[in-house]
Image (tube, rainbow, N blue to C red; front, side, top):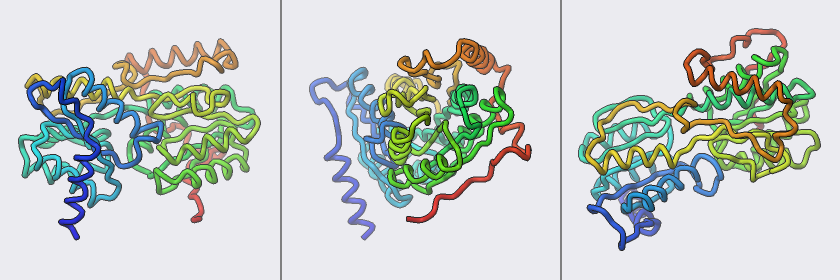
Length: 341
């Protein structure tokens, strides 16, 4: 069974490879393993765009495979390394342990764990401080809410997702200390129906401003927002204003193509050394992008506060950490769990 799954992953890597044989440089090969669909319009699609940028800008062989379970993820890492890939992007916090185990057998392959924890051997993390952009989303949400209730839908409660939620809440409370922050974790990044149901549950308790970090499951959240008058959302990981142009006020964006290209160029040029690489607002890789179509709805004074906060975060004088007002009796910080369907 294990051998069969290994062969299947190898076949999928071959089938989904997107190399350009006419424009190769030195035979370097780059692999990407995503934990979900590259059609999610968020985390995984951004990584795939990064892979294509590597192909088109550096003219390298590239390949992508989807691996959802821990076993499949480790096998995919091992398959790429065994095939001699020079650089493998393991796209998610959950890949850290598997990448370290596989790397011990394949020291010539560079493994990059996005949202990873630590550098170990030939494994290095790219850390994206999305909480800095989510802080700005929270500020806008708190300044625009009519109900004082904010909703957040997460896929799985991983540390980087919790950090983004904390940034969202702290940003909101810097503008309006009385906001009631509610959250639901789905235990899934793929279930759009559960995402929609979670958003509707939060709407029923008064939430009129939403943020998320739920990948494809968030497509259901945007559907619920579009169905409900007076409710708005903020995108995550990518500019998601196109999913609901008249309901998305802005997005907390990670420019994954830019970050991926920086790493791939270093590996190609023999200049890469495993290290912790962290990106925030100052780098431009993480940023808040308002939706131009709805920008006129946001008061000028609130925009000025957001710009000032962004400057302070970039300068290191404002840290979007855990909500300082989490113990207030008018706040709800314990996760609300979605019911099983």
